[in-house]
Length: 123
Image (cartoon, rainbow, N blue to C red; front, side):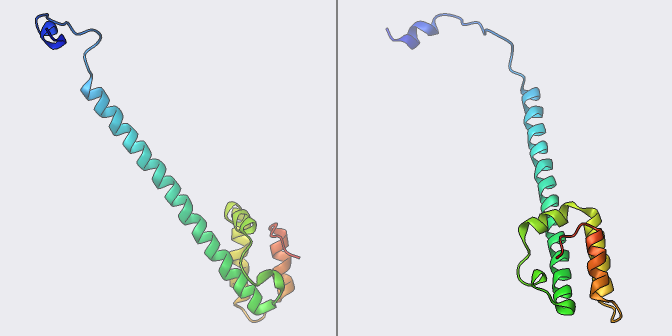
């Protein structure tokens, strides 16, 4: 006799608690929602960093075109971009000085002084 035939003659009682389908479904739904929220958080943070990098790039171009200087030419240093994205004080100062650079009476020394006061690493 095979094992399946032997076992089919006996009534097997379920051992342990009954399966909780609703609990498992809600748990899976909660995991999916949490994963979605985490994804949105990182997507939003990445978008803000891109906006900050664009602001900094525009300012550096304007500063190079108006005042020259090797430190404003070329690609932005990644450390500077990270520092800029994390500092609201520096971002405010850079945006303000960008707008000042659009005026013809603005002196480059005044802009550099304002940047130094906001901890912008300028030589």
